[in-house]
Image (cartoon, rainbow, N blue to C red; front, side, top):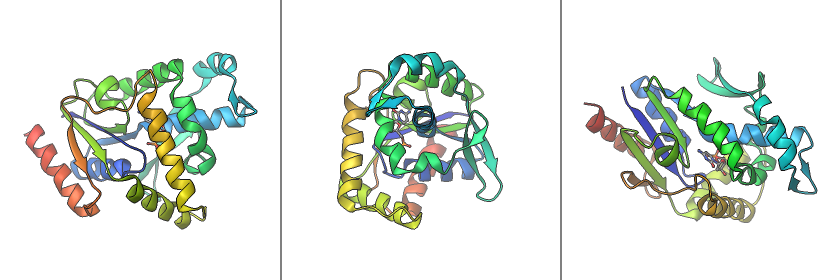
Length: 226
Ligand code: DC
């Protein structure tokens, strides 16, 4: 069994492809972004954002009490994210979380705590984890590293369709702004910035169907695992 690290820009279908690959090869899928989103939800629920400013001292005190776990959802066949035992899968996907999560993900002590949890989830290998720093920081020795990207306009259109389907209508411009802003913050932060690992394989899926992308990924897995 190997470790598969899938990193890349926001909303380029990383989790869709990671989930599908994990299902096909019988590996565990872990969505590391969900963990940053859950910490963001915790901060919103506990008044740690005051006038848009994050209360870092309070978060530092609380970080050891923020427990994130995953539970299988029999209806979707996927893992739902739990924050201190409560299923928060739906809440963490909202725009309110998307707007704040990059601020949380830039905090060094939050990253340290979550990276430790992510590494623990991968000790037995047989894992597909997606995020921003999986191939560079979390699993620098991962046997297969993929760096996924697509044009910002294509990513914004895909994300808009997802939000509309979920009954959270918004505009193309605001989605495009949110994701380019997240890319900027994610790529320029000091700790664990989004960057391609030297040994990662780039997958630009702007012009690929989901089926084509899954096929490419499966072929890459076979080339590494066999
Ligand atoms: O993949 P996502 O959109 O759910 O990620 C949410 C945010 O978390 C994103 O803005 C970047 C951050 N993130 C991170 O910094 N490191 C990771 N390993 C995963 C996500």
